[in-house]
Image 1 (spheres, rainbow, N blue to C red):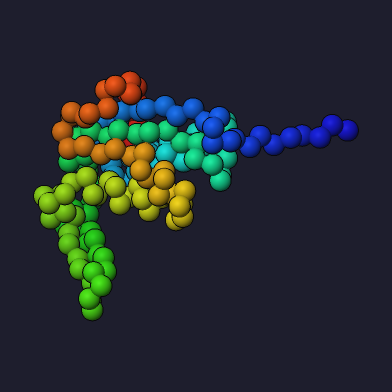
Image 2: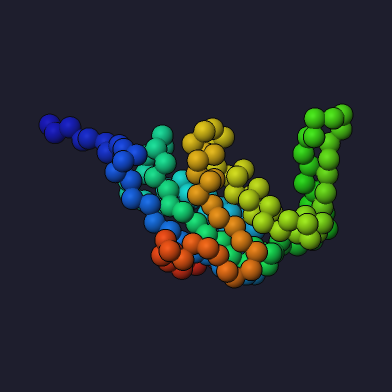
Length: 146
């Protein structure tokens, strides 16, 4: 009887690619879940849970993402400031103030809640508009959030 060996990726062996995604008219949740899978590396056959095997993702036009239904008016983002009570704002005011934060928070909440998740999230680059400073890395276009 032959023993089947499980492959465990080592951090030095991982080859990371760069992807560029256009977020124009993409639904936030669907786009965020696809980005989280790429950042974790779950789409690769060499996926290892305790090693960062994911790729870099550059997202352009983040101000043009959409929500389904009436979430622009009803969705509330809340956070703790250190003082009594919570701070809150709607999705419309967040889009006007800092549009990249909408997608950033959606992806962050889909990643592991540990040091490895922080490292994965640092590979996500969000930009308002269609220009980004990562042309030297040779990012390949990818269609996400269908």
